[in-house]
Length: 248
Image 1 (cartoon, helix red, strand yellow):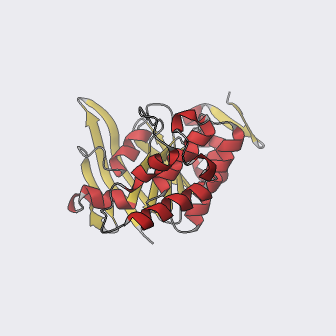
Image 2 (cartoon, helix red, strand yellow):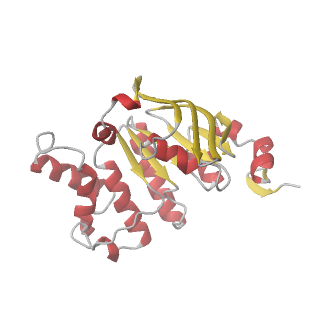
Image 3 (cartoon, one colour):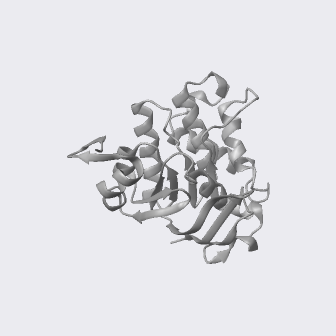
C-alpha cells in the first residue's frame, strides 16, 4: 500500500488564506471523494498534491518520502492529474492525446512498442479504439471526457487526481466513467476525486473529505461525512429517507 500524507498544509494567495492546517492521509486501493462549497479549497488541494502548486507550508510525503526529495518527472510518473477542463487547441487525434500521458517516460523506460501497447490497451479499456485516429475536437462531450481520462490512466499511475470528472456529463457517462475509475481502484490504484454530486459521492467513494473555507470539516466514511448534521451545516440540505431536500 502506498500513501500520500498531507501534514499541516497551509496555503495563501496574497493575504487571503485558502487552506488552513490540512491533515489528510490518502491510500492506494481507496477512492477518496473531496466535497465542499464552491471556493472552499478543493481544487487547490489537488493542485498541491499534483505538484502544480508548491508554495505551501507544511509537508507532503509520498511513500514516506518528502515531496521535495522527488524530481518533478518522478512524481509525474506516479501521480496523474485530470483537471476539470482541458483546453486542447490543436486537432490532435485521440491516439496522440493519450500518448501525451506518457511524456514523463524516457525512450529507455518505454520504447515505441511498449508505448503503443499501453495506448491501445487503455483505448480498448475505455471503448475508444474506434476513435483512435479521429480528432478529439470531433468527439462528443462524453467521448472527449473518456479520452482525457485515458490520457491520465495510460501511465498506470499509483494515484489518479480528478477534478469533477463527471460534473458536465449526462447520467450514462457519469456512471460509465466512475465505474471505470472504481475498477482501477479495486485493482490497486488510489483515486482522489472532487465530487459535485453528493449522491454519487456517497455511492462510489470509500472515504469522503469535506472541506469548508479551507478547513477539513470531516474525513470519514460517506455515511458519516455526509450525515445530516454536516449536510445542513455546510450545504443547507439534508436527506429525507434516500433523497436530498432543502433543510429548514
